[in-house]
Image 1: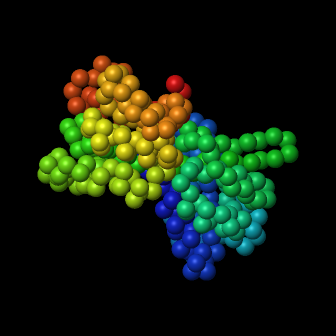
Image 2: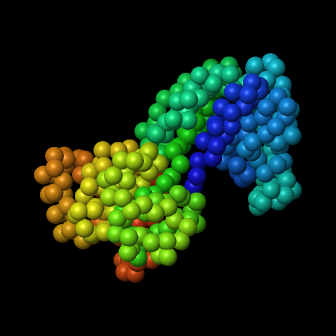
Image 3: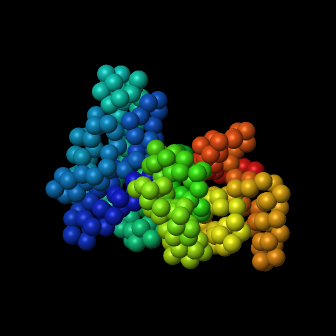
Length: 318
């Protein structure tokens, strides 16, 4: 679930600061099976050093040669490959397919480098595949998809750089323990916040980012992006409400709170009294989770995590 584009852009900045020429190769279109999805990156410097990948290894050689060429010509190249069935088996696929890769000098994206690295919202980079001209804007949510836009006169690749997914849980309870395990299996970064040190202990949460500050203080000290989910599980208004007040004023894509319908009704009344609007409070998924008929802590954790992933991938369709 992590957004590996951030690590690559950090490398681009490092290489650029060191004075290296850099080319960027991006998967812009696929048919059938493809080892890497649309939007996958690889960077190449003028010495042939590489980071990232655009396939399972079957096309990298040709992409690297094209990258060295465009660093000299500064003219983008669109490469098209057919992955045979034999090659597909070699890279772990059941059948072949085709892939198009845009290879370009990084020059026309360098002006956006600092914005890209500091953004807390999804980013849209629109690149003219003929000229390399690029525009920068912010996206609405993480549900938008990268795609190649073709017409008679233009070939534009619209790439969505989604923010890495992170989960912040208020309350170090049994459900949280199960949520942490599920998140780890999905490569999701997790922070558990609970000032009650009896609950928030390394014994109960080994190898977990634990914070025992008060929830509002802890959230104010963190960078909440459009890739952040905030879930409150304590049932205690003294802990949950201050966290929700911060969450509702943030870019978090998913805000949820555990409790019955009556508990959520009381929660809404308290937040209305605090000056929040019905629309703002409507961002809260309460009771948290999909209606799976969940009973055990692990089942409830699964329902919350499933709802979170659904919102992350498809947006809020309530």
